[in-house]
Image 1 (tube, rainbow, N blue to C red):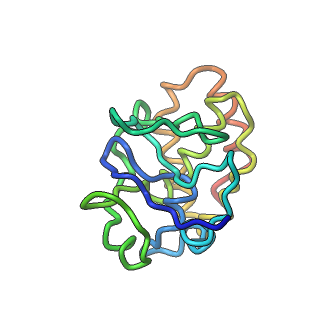
Image 2: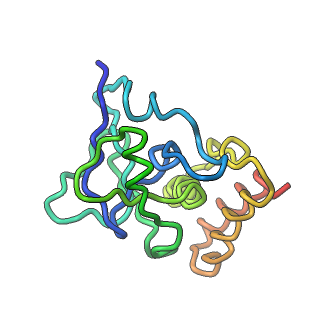
Image 3: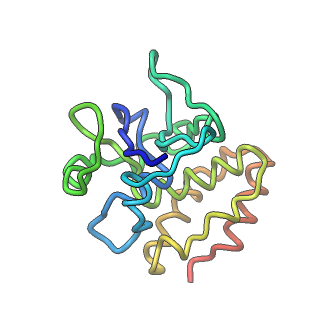
Length: 172
C-alpha cells in the first residue's frame, strides 16, 4: 500500500526529525535527498510509522505504534538548539503538514537525534553514517559540536555508545 505522509502539528518541543527532517531541502548540500520515498511514495507495513516525530508528545496526540513506538526525546540534551522553521521549504516541496508552520530539526540535529535514539536504547548507532548526510568537514563538525555540548550529561552507557559512533564517524 502506498501512502502520502501528513506530518502532525509541530512546535519547538514536538518536531519533525530523523529521515523526515533530513529530506527537507536545506540551503546547503546536506541531507538525504529521498523526499519522494520519504513523504510521497511510502510503502507502509503495519509496523511502519509514516512520520518521524521527536520531542515531547503533546497531550491528545496519538502514541506511535510498531517499530517507531518509542518516541525520541532529546530536548533534555539539546533543548531548542538546531530546531528551525521549515514551513517555506516544506511547502516548496509539497510536503503536507498540519498547523501553520512546520518545525523540524536541522540536518545536524536530525543526525544527532538518530544517533541518540539508538544509543539511549542501548543499541549501536552504526546505521547512521555521517558521510551519507554531511559532505564537508564543516558540516560534520556541526554534528560533533552538538555531542560535545551535551557530553557531560550522558549516562556511562550513552557515553560509550556515542564514543563508538564518533570514532567511526570522524570529522575528516
